[in-house]
Amino acid sequence: QVTLRESGPALVKPTQTLTLTCTFSGFSLSTSGMCVSWIRQPPGKALEWLARIDWDDDKYYSTSLKTRLTISKDTSKNQVVLTMTNMDPVDTATYYCARIPSSSSGEWFDPWGQGTLVTVSS
Amino acid sequence: SYELTQPPSMSVSPGQTARITCSGDALPNQYAYWYQQKTGQAPVLMIYLDSERPSGIPERFSGSTSGTTATLTINGVQAEDEAAYYCQSTDSSGAFVMFGGGTKLTVL
Image (cartoon, rainbow over all chains, first blue to last red; front, top):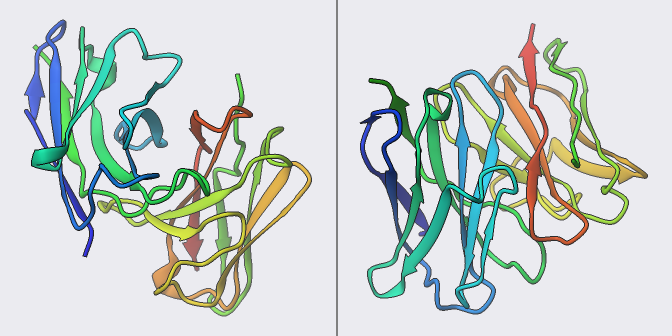
């Protein structure tokens, strides 16, 4: 069974750096074609894709946020970490990590973690 | 920038057919994917590669594409189908993801 779980602070102050960890089980990020992405959703709003990391350590970032994002992986720990710098209240959202089962076939997310709500406020 | 456009909301009565559309210029060349999100829950994959249904997803859910429009069809809508539905695709390079704005489906 494939599962993912997000963890990190529930509250950060403006200008601080957010660090989120996605811990997963049921698959290996060293398997060819496997990828993990981060996606966020502000309260009451639509989903927004943030970043992706591939089994071969290739990385992709949202064009609008790439200067603030860093994605990395620790294959031995089955973890993917996302950092976002210079947090602002507009970054308040539920942050999800999700698996891409086979990037060679297409880019779909299955399954998703439960999400973690991050509030940016002083 | 590339966008996917969905109607913000739609309503159907139980047993009717719901068709949720998603429009985007890259859709003729990129696959469409669909997710269901119930209130307070994470999204769930409903359709991948335009029309494939993951195991465990009811047969009343189907997907299709024509030109720049992808469609999620729900035949015989049930009360439990009330949710927000999001389409997703990638840009022409295939590496960058975008989501539609979501369609809130209300079952009357």
